[in-house]
Image (cartoon, rainbow, N blue to C red; front, side):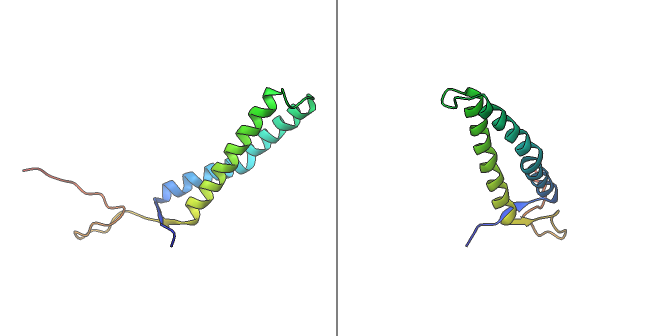
Length: 96
């Protein structure tokens, strides 16, 4: 059984936006950098190429992580009123 990831609607939206950015513009920009670095020639000593490959690996890893988080997400909203504390509830503790 997979453990649920509790997210607010805002948290879900933020992760979705990051995922779209990574899968779209970021990945395209990095692909261009890689192509440019490859055209420079000798890859064994090409710092730009190695840097771009490391960044691509990080992006791929982050995409998988976000997809896993969203895949197991349980969206929560503000807690119910009536004295029941649940995930997403805001409580106020008073000291006497």
